[in-house]
Length: 186
Image (tube, rainbow, N blue to C red; front, side, top):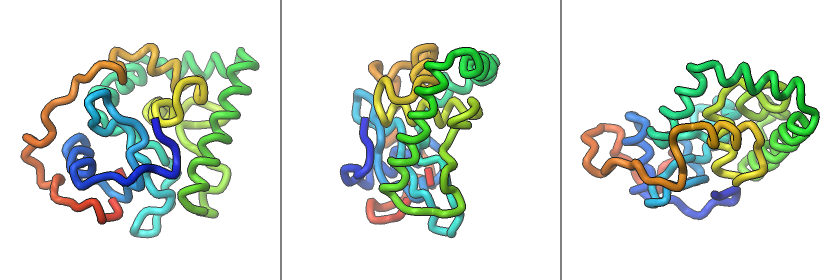
C-alpha cells in the first residue's frame, strides 16, 4: 500500500507494468501497491497526461491476475449488487463518500487539474461504475478506506497476499523499452 508522495519507481517497475499491460506504461508517478513478490499491482498515474489530457483514474490496476478477477465480477453483474447496497445502506454510502474525498486528496498531491475537479474514479461518490478503479484505490489506500473496493477484493478469486505472477522479464514485448526517468498513463 502506498499513497502520495510515492517512493521512486525503477526502470524494472515500468518494464514490468508495460509487460503486464501489453503496451508501454505512460505517465506513471508511483507504484501504489505491490504483489507479495514485489511486482507492481497498482500504479499511480499523473492527473494530467503528457499530451495534456486530464486523467481522473489515479490508481490504475495493472496486475493481470487482479484485473481478470475484477473483470469476472463485473461480467457477473456484481456492480448492480453494489449499487443497490449503496442505495440501501446509509453507512456504506457515507463510507463511500469518504473514500471519494480520500481519493481526491491523494490526487491533489499529484497536481491540480481544474477539468476534473471533484471527479474521482469508479463512479464515486454516487454509484459503482468501475470495480477495477475501486479495487485499485482499495489496494493503494489499504483496507477500510474504500468499502466497495474492499468488497470487490474480498469477493475476487485473486488475493494480494498470494503471488500468481509470471516472469515479466521473459515477456517479449516492445512495450518493455523504457527508463525510470520517463514520465510513464498506465
